[in-house]
Length: 175
Image 1 (cartoon, one colour):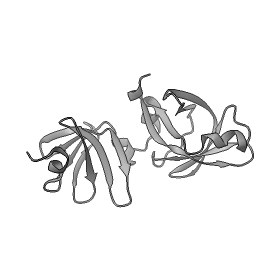
Image 2 (cartoon, one colour):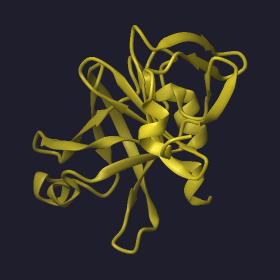
Image 3 (spheres, helix red, strand yellow):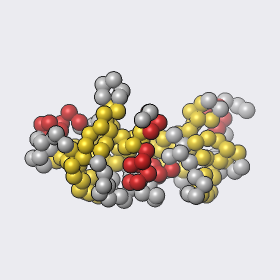
Image 4 (cartoon, one colour):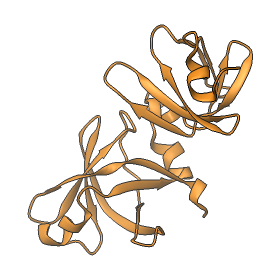
């Protein structure tokens, strides 16, 4: 798989219990993760290394306990703390809740009829969600909240927004 085939879904937020379980803090929404068999963590060289999952217990909508193969003690799990966790594209599609903002990855954003670009990253904040996309070769953050979000079409993977006046110019320079 290439870099684009992996999706960052969260991080290791803690170590739990005496058997070395990790606490996965994720943005997948309300999901069971019951048939999850592997996660990926980048090594020092930036390569995605698979870690095999022996068991999953859901803690709440944003956290789960994972028991990983070859990790038997809290001491063995500690080096994984704060590491980003990645899923394969197939696992992401299978496990991300349709209601979770992260499920919007890959959707096309339109301001009215103008196509802006494809969502490359979803950043959740307390009162809004920011979507990172590339517009005319520049990185742009588009806010999704009550005032800006007009329509989400899950069938065609399109999001229609009404951007605040001047927002694109901030990123792209004056037109």
